[in-house]
Image (cartoon, rainbow, N blue to C red; front, side, top):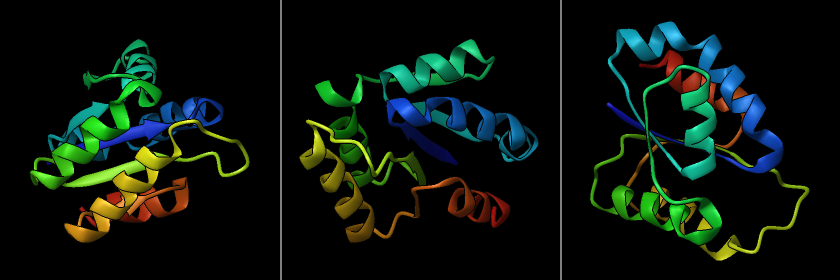
Length: 120
């Protein structure tokens, strides 16, 4: 199971906390984590094995979207900051659209992410 994790700057600490809270599920299901650059770095610093791609604003969201389109990602957890402006908004919407097109589960907040992980 490959899970993509992405978090906007104001949500990165929340993502790391979420990963810690669900470490048992992630390990027991042998989940493979991939992430956009800075989110991946934060997760690595917290002790998680993560493949970090480019940072979101310089193509990381698009890289994950491409993996979704290729069916190489089974679940996307994207802690978005809906109150901030993001220069790479088109890439974010593309990723979300491709999750819908390819029927890939997408969680955009901790509550929905927890429900999806519990379903594993």
